[in-house]
Amino acid sequence: MINKVRHRILNLSLGDAELRLLRVFASVVQHGGFSAAQSSLGMTQATISTHMRHLEERLGLRLCSRGRSGFLLTDEGRLVYEATLDLFGSLEKFQSRVGEAQGELTGSLTFGTVDAMITNRDLDLQGALAAFHRQAPRVHLEIDVAAPQVLHQGLLNGGYQIVLMPTVGSATPHLRTQPVFSEVQKLYCAQGHPLFDLPDDALTDAVLEAQSFAGRTYMLTETICGVNFHWAAATPHMEGTLLLLLSGAYIGFLPDHYADEWVRNGRLRLLAPERMTFEDMFHIAHPRSKPSRAAETLAQAILASAPRLDSMAISG
Image (cartoon, rainbow, N blue to C red; front, top):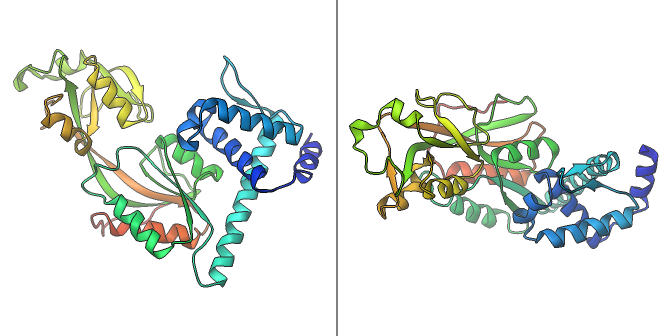
């Protein structure tokens, strides 16, 4: 089978159209399905399906199965995906080295981050992107907003060259990370929730534990701030959490900068802030192998746009 797949790949003409199809395929795999890749690709599910069908026709291979059982790579699809990552990695290295020989940064850079960065008062990410563009105007920057699990996996499988994300799980020896800033998370409910008009002194741990809680898919379902919450829903995104809270059926944590506007307009209420507060440390992460000059340039721009964390060192 390996020889069959290798033969089909070697006989694939690699023009712009084929590279575009392979990039769609890689994004679908990284996101775990057609629907999940829509936002990243900026395509409808039907368009993604068409691209995938064209790639399978050109290769003469069935790359994945999709249906009620979900998205699943075939054995051939797994081999093609691995070859695709190798191909894109080689292309990026070629473009980077040519640019360095010419004395300028060129090529492409894939950067991933989580949502709700635009309102963060402790990180001028848009300013960092502007600084990066001034230093590397010829680098094609691709930004993907995804869940921390997707970002972490994308670093490991080559889907991203650099990401900005909160800590997920234990340290990974294949990655290098550097702390950037700490994000404050506080507990909220929305107008219409039973706790919205309850006095602060009535918000005991027992009362909070009795409520339906909207957690994060990348968080362990364990005690938070000393409270054993009743997990009734979960989402990887801040916008998803906000939607659940605004339904009036759940309580949950949000970054304070993201929730502030909703608190000011009376739609959200802060719950027991003196107790229900914790911090998420955000890191820049990239594969342990030497990052490209473009990735290093973006990392430095992001670090320059955040509060100084002199006491924290690079890890991993």
